[in-house]
Length: 149
View 1 (cartoon, helix red, strand yellow):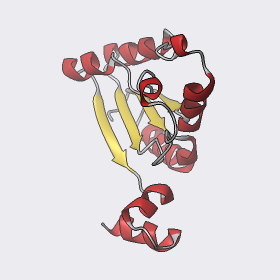
View 2: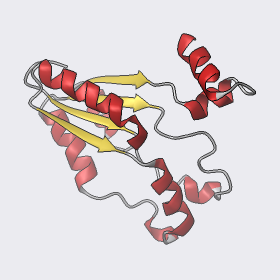
View 3: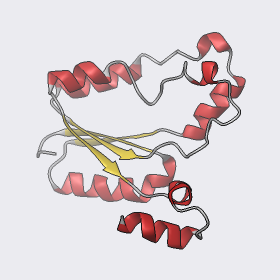
View 4: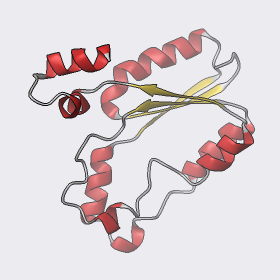
């Protein structure tokens, strides 16, 4: 992230404390604006369960516009990963689940290929994934092991 850049920060809602720390550091480095996009994976599950099937591929026009304008402004993209807990879509018809590609957008690839943004994916250990990697351990011990690794 360079001084004067706009920053798009994508994360799950439970990452809010880390998002705030990154936003503070970005502003301290001279960011013009930090745009926090919280992607709630639980809402994605609800959409797959309850939304009309013919709406599952719908993406509001401002989502790609936001990304393309960030590219045009030579901004910075920061994604905190993971943003989806393990097993989130268990029990959902894969044909339905696969139609909603969010938080991915087809416009990501042109922006990536144009090399108009700085970007970073930040790995972030969360208890749900720590339990998958270290089954049988308590959350604290599984998290400690995962963070160590």
